[in-house]
Image (tube, rainbow, N blue to C red):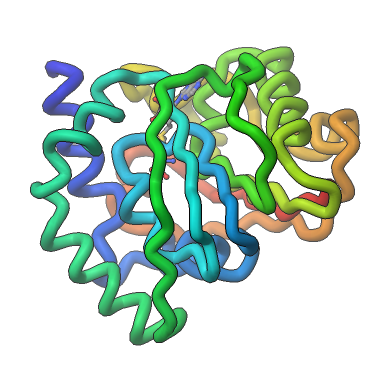
Length: 223
Ligand SMILES: C[S@@+](CC[C@H](N)C(=O)[O-])C[C@H]1O[C@@H](n2cnc3c(N)ncnc32)[C@H](O)[C@@H]1O
């Protein structure tokens, strides 16, 4: 499948805001923990403007991804997301919050394992990105970099999908070989984070289970 088609299909299906339990988990975690006026989305995929609806008080958001097609989709083809954006907004007003933030969003093509010149942030998140890396060294570098982008007291929200029975195969580095569950605690601690919360849940959507994922692990860590 061409990268452009894969990216569009991913964008149109990953968060639908109908009744999937993951949509509620992600929306609630972002709204609760991605506080502050300057926020960072690491490995944003093609959906940064969609998840940006849930920042509670951001004025500026920076979204980074290594895949050109993800950035191109958000810049040139985001009209395909009009229906989902409308649904997500009414979902937010109904279940999460009536208050809107509408931050200015900058899209940056970059590698989360490299140190990027993007300044300091009040909070940062990686939703499904560090699990798309292949080695512990890359995972550690990505966590260290996230730490360096945060202001003192800043929060890192981590969420990853686990394929514990057999490896889920997706193209274009949408998932990787690392075992996120094993790496969360040592890598967050080594970077200097204090882990505030860490949980797993097996409440997954139907499509996620069909793909072979078994659980989601998430953590909130403080600099
Ligand atoms: C499963 S997708 C998650 C996308 C989005 N955060 C979401 O919530 O749907 C993983 C993303 O990580 C990106 N990615 C993988 N390795 C990366 C790297 N080294 N640097 C930046 N982005 C990376 C991929 O391009 C992809 O967009």
